Image (cartoon, rainbow, N blue to C red; front, top):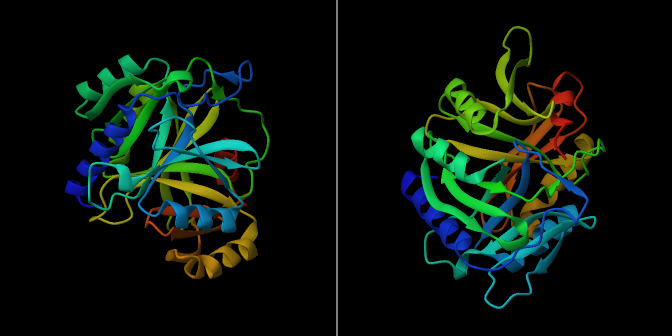
Length: 304
């Protein structure tokens, strides 16, 4: 995405966050926990909401529930009954630019403090901390290298780490594609008190440097160098798929359902297979087979 479009995206997200309506808590009362450092939610901006719902429903079995609040431009996404994300109809936002994209939401202990840390480090605050009712308080920001995300402080309602395997068709992992991975890791450690692990994946003759950030002793996200020089810093979210055959099946049906195959099934340096597709709106999402055959299996296993 070009920098100008990234700015439009962030301003549109700011408009969403400043809309005053209650959003359900991430976990039912008494079933959540405070887990700063965990990516707890994913929002999708789409200019083709009906086609997008059909696309993800057919490929992954997701269901969609428009938020029943007057004026709310928001649809909840469920997978096997579990809330996993939300969708915003881009057509109802104050922009005509194509800003379709997935946006990660990172849990923080104190959103006011985290937002100040980000601003002091050279990041951009598009929406200051704003209440979303039962959901908590959110700010929409770009980190110092320009990757857009949201920071969320809940009232102890982050989804718990129950040790269960990530659901097939659910979110598996999130990865920051950064200009400078070392600087990015240092920033996020200040933001959410992450621990850092260095991982070398891939063949011995050409290992790939990879940074894993952990909180509560659980791997939460990865940081790697952006795969192309002309790609702005961005977050990449991964869905779990059931083996190579399952991945190939999804890829083979993507275009018929109105999507695009951005990268066909490819063996990943860390093991397993990965593909990248886009839904009808053009928002990209990565698909990863899991479990992985080597050390990255432990990494991905920490994210529900």
